[in-house]
Image 1 (cartoon, rainbow, N blue to C red):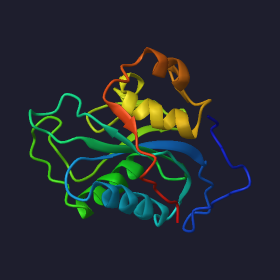
Image 2 (tube, rainbow, N blue to C red):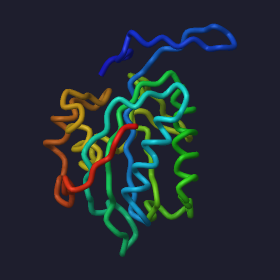
Image 3 (tube, rainbow, N blue to C red):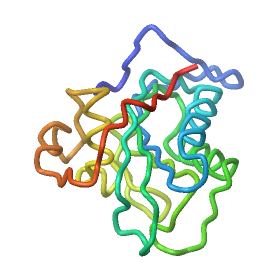
Image 4 (cartoon, rainbow, N blue to C red):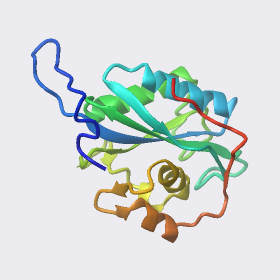
Length: 189
C-alpha cells in the first residue's frame, strides 16, 4: 500500500490552492437487513459519486455469519472497496455515515445490531488515529476474516499498518462462517 497510489492525479483545493495528498483507503461494507446486495451496490455508487474519491477496486461478495451480534441476527453480505482520496480520514468517515443513513441505518445503541448498511473505514494511507471518533487502522480489521478475505482477493499484497500483511493475518484468522458468493457481483460505475 502506498501513500500516493496514483501519482498522476493531483488535486488542488479550489479555495486555497493547497495541494492535498492522495491516499489509498480501504473500506469494509456489510449488510444483513433488507435488500443486502442493493445496499452494498448503492454504497459503492455513492462513494464513486463523492468528490475527491476515486473507487479503484471492489472485492468479490462474501456471505458471512454475524460476529458478536445479537441472537437471531441474519447473515451478512460483505465486501471491501479500495479507493484513492484526498479527503481527510474524518471527512471520509462522515461520508460513510451519511451513506449509511441514506440506506436506512438505524443506530439503536445495541452492540453489533443488525443493519441495512455498515461502512467501516479500515485504513487511510499510513494514518494512525485512536480517539473516541475513530481508530486507524480499524481496531478489529486484523482479526476479522470477513474483512481480510475480500481485501486479500482484491489486493493480495496489502498490509495493515502495525499489524502485518493481510495474507498472513488471513491465515491466522477463523474463516469458518464465510462463503464466497460468485453468483453475486458488485460493479464500479
